[in-house]
Length: 346
Image (tube, rainbow, N blue to C red; front, side, top):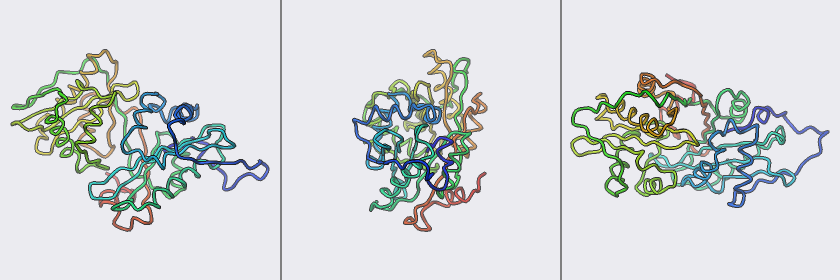
């Protein structure tokens, strides 16, 4: 989520001395693509939406299979593009779904309650649907420092649930991977068998993680066939004929990112995660990149310890806020999510 700092600190009601303007909220259409690009590049929003300002990355997110087409909105005030909401509705393995909203308002239209109108419209659409299993949670997020985004979120009933960190290190000078005994690696070859092994390893690695998004063969095929997919940037690790870990590198905007690194539970604690991490860093070093980046849940202490020991340092912190829709009921969140929503963090 983003509102710019001023957009979240709006007065309780419109200034009667200012003429009322006409606000129109409409679903995003393909011919709004240039409008959305211009909005995310607005000086008040470009830092918050960072990689979205890259045209290829914005196209990548607009093509995301989980983007909610009806809740991705463009706001126009007196006919001029003023703001937007990019929405994603994501399935939960327990059933039902959760949603993520990214909201932005251009600088010259701030303090006109447009962010509030976009949030209200997206919530009405999401919460008014008959979603099988129900809508269990809506989240927004913003890079620090952004006290206005925090005020906007909490002012609309959202609670701070956790932080995600962007970390990076120099791509040069990374030690060679030391693979555990009995472990071999293969570069993804695009075949159906390897696609299935990757999917199974991903699901086993992340099933207990916050906001785990279960993978399917269909989704994996879509990822692997996308224009941004790096086939030689996906390494799979095998032990006794089974895929037990992987590292998938990607371009995050113009940055080389270790996008997803996973190790199945029964292969942890033997140094496989460290070896895969080093493989990922060296991949970008071989391409001549100066830095390698990654993003990690601030409560994933095991991963944080590994990354720090491999010279990664936190460069940005992203706050996440969540609200449980009234229709979700008291059992909407897992015990871990409920503790986090109440403000209890390790």
